[in-house]
Image 1 (tube, rainbow, N blue to C red):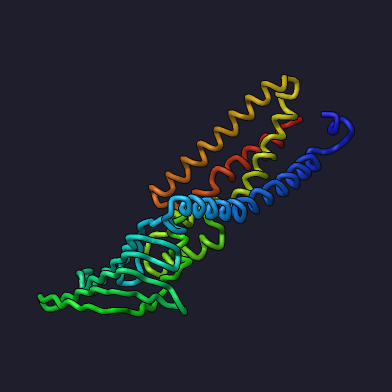
Image 2 (cartoon, rainbow, N blue to C red; image 1 turned 90 degrees about the vertical axis):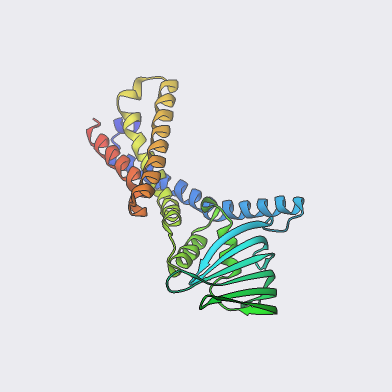
Length: 266
């Protein structure tokens, strides 16, 4: 109020607020894209190490590479797997081969499987092969395995892009990861929007109220935005909205309401 009385325009006040929001948003993005994923991975490694299960904690992973469906029964580290099953599908999606591997290690750009038991199905007959080792070439890399066992919120932008590209190459559904990527990119704009949204409350009818009432209203607005943001994201996944629309719709709506209220402030 004192700034307005001294001749500072709403445009200048809004511009300064947006700049402050951009700085806070950039800091939040840096923490969410670098510090948080690194911290999550270190925490998982520490927890798995204490339990004595290796870096990945012996997790089980299902994934696909072209006509091959992998079931990693025990993921020791991203480049070392325990028991592994590979199901190979034919053109009509029938099972053409089933391969069981006792152990696999990623070396020199390929997987080296040991103690391989392979069953091939053709013309109504099954052929069983016992192989001491098998070299496997493909797009399934240790990086992809590591990304698969992490939650979407714990992935960086680079990791999400890598995982989305892998899923698309293998004709798999990548919408949940696309949504996580778009929400991560929209987050700095959300910080700027919410700070701009607060200006009409400071200069409007709440300027003569106590700090407690302002804080209460601010909490309600923040909770309301959070709930709407979560509902919109999940609704978008259910009904197949574009991930960018599901991620940015609440921010755009609140930005529009904030701009409209700012114009009405006298």
